[in-house]
Image 1 (tube, rainbow, N blue to C red):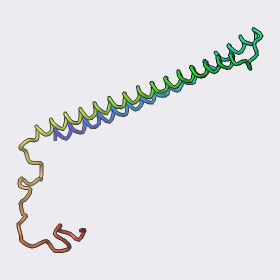
Image 2: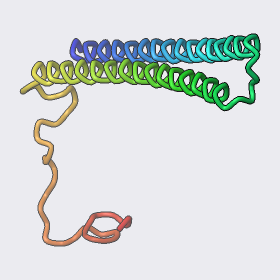
Image 3: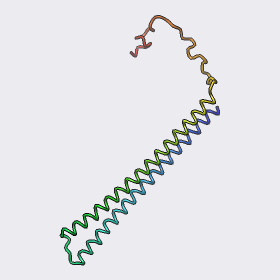
Image 4: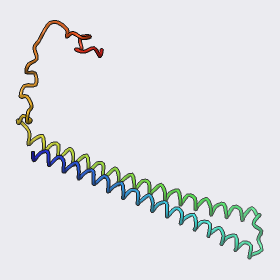
Length: 152
């Protein structure tokens, strides 16, 4: 009985740990998405300031140099945003992976403890000889094939 309770508590604990990890991973990815949006806004603001600076200096926006500078600003902004999202997703995967590993280790440890506490003890209602009542005959069982039923 105590072994069953120990196993049930371990399962409940690991389930709660996995649920908490999922919540934490979702929070990390949500924060990553918010940072990506903030990065987008910062990139647009930088490009806007650059445009204003060029225009106030009398440089037209059609200039090849201006286009190259603005293109570079957007490329760097995009790379930063993509890196931030990738990092958030990696952190989320690591959180889930660590929780899964912990859950498996907890269940394996609990299983090992339960096995050692049950070693040599027959389960309640279980036969001590699993082959009791089975006799050896030379003929195949009826009802199908030598596998014993009509399934094969």
